Image 1: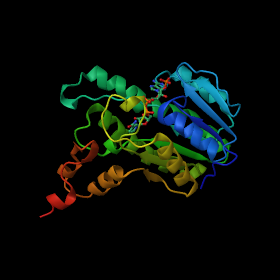
Image 2: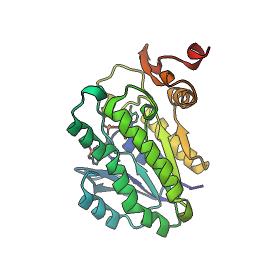
Image 3: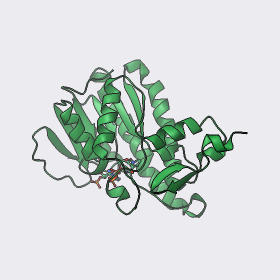
Length: 247
Ligand SMILES: NC(=O)c1ccc[n+]([C@@H]2O[C@H](COP(=O)([O-])OP(=O)(O)OC[C@H]3O[C@@H](n4cnc5c(N)ncnc54)[C@H](OP(=O)(O)O)[C@@H]3O)[C@@H](O)[C@H]2O)c1
């Protein structure tokens, strides 16, 4: 188990959206220092927040970050982008570029910082997935988050010997820039981030932050058609809930 209080935390994409909420929640839970990255970092008024530059698609940027955060014990891979097009009609280059951020970006940061976590006693690695890791019809975004879910589960095995707690977070629509154009019901990012950090403190390895994430996790054991999603009254839901597909 990993205590947030007194810890030094890194949040990729920590200057806005869910990442900024992770920074605020970590500080509320007593973190001593939080590194908050952005591609063009802005100064912070809070002396506990250290803004740093990071472009996750650039190996030299990731290496430079790793040099600057030698005291970190909790790494939160939050940075990500969306891609809302059907997989069948998305250009391969667009999918590859998307994976560069949402999949390879997380791999780069994790590989670069795993030795630091080991040197600092193990600590915790938190990867931000999505309910769409498990949903059918979520295009390149869903494919990237599914790949990331798999990677997180492998990192849990890889990093067990060094005592790093590896945590995957699944969430549905949350009120950030990423969903600003969507007229849907959204969670409060601070609640999502705080619940995820508390789950880390409680020794959990997977965080299902809302009803739709719990619904899709349960649907994994049913027919694959149960993984299709729909929007009903602004809520993301399973198109065929298990009860309607069970004979
Ligand atoms: N919002 C939702 O409904 C929702 C649902 C499920 C999962 N998620 C996941 O939650 C995470 C945060 O998303 P959000 O909703 O907060 O999105 P957001 O408001 O659009 O913020 C995206 C963040 O990612 C960073 N980022 C994007 N590309 C980057 C790159 N190439 N290198 C470094 N940083 C990069 C951005 O940093 P800059 O400041 O440099 O732009 C920004 O901080 C993502 O992984 C997303 O997939 C979100």
